[in-house]
Image (spheres, one colour):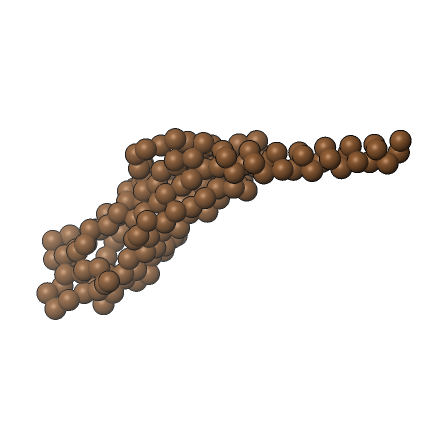
Length: 168
């Protein structure tokens, strides 16, 4: 009798674990993201370059995320309207939620200030999971799938005319 209770408990635990894993995989967020930036940029006309951090969630669960934009040799110039939560001159972090079943990309535009004529500069976009204390938050944190669509990082190089183009 005692052995049958142990087997029932072990079977229930194993069933629960496999059930949770199956649920998490089936209802996971699937987040696609990309960095939208112009092919070239001319500092003779303007010193502000606008890039867009875009993402969508094709999955079955909302995904709490941290969007991160980092730059080298230039400065981020955030507007007061942006929902950024952490900012330094070379990095900006935005806490957001990627809503489930999104077909269209949505995102945030960020201004980059190009001063001092650097020979080149780099802009990189990353996404990290955020934990939210709920069933969907746990599923999102454990099972979220990220799909980077290039580019997620670009390097601009100056040519002889003062124009910057993306280095392939």
